[in-house]
Figure 1 (cartoon, one colour):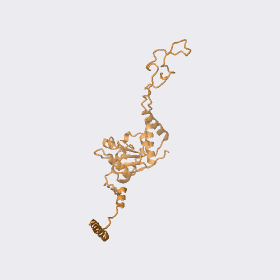
Figure 2: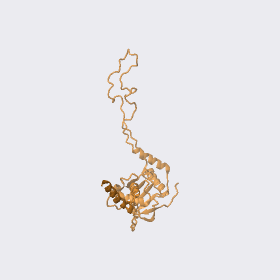
Figure 3: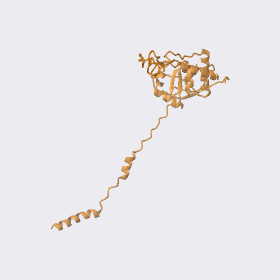
Figure 4: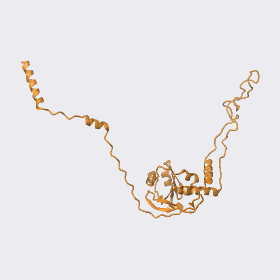
Length: 265
């Protein structure tokens, strides 16, 4: 897979407005994808993250065991000199780690460059490279990063944002997002590129200068009205209209009073 290919990428503004597609530089995106180089680079990166701080104690550093558990002869059991010998429970460890192991791996500079270029080309083949005209954030805003990814349609994917140099406001904007990683373009390693699903690159980092365009406001999301509670609706349905007083009922009351007076007389 070493054929030379010309790649282009979709371009957006920092707020997510689509622009014309941009050609990717052939010096970096030349179509080369070297799998063995990427494997070595990722393996070396993960090995270099190991601290090697695991440590165990030999029998000389375990507390206790200063006297013989029983006398040398006469008990019928095997002779023992200490309860902290390696074959005793709670005893010392033989040939264990002592916190001084170094897992560091180094690669030739050209192999690192080949692996990084291969990872970027692999993402370009998948159309997972996007160009952002400029990250001109004047203050940190996580909402701006979320809105950008949402308007681009990649909000649910792991995104690697590569800026032109160190930009603290962009870094702070994406720091709280678990699926977003922000770093300068020159610091991105093979591991970071392969970790991501999509790569967002600032235009000036790859030698492009894009003219500003008019931003399109995002469509407001209409909130649906909350439905009336079921209990309230049931109560209103159960209520019955008050019965109207008829002429018969009004006439019965005085008649009953007159009958009661006659009996009293």
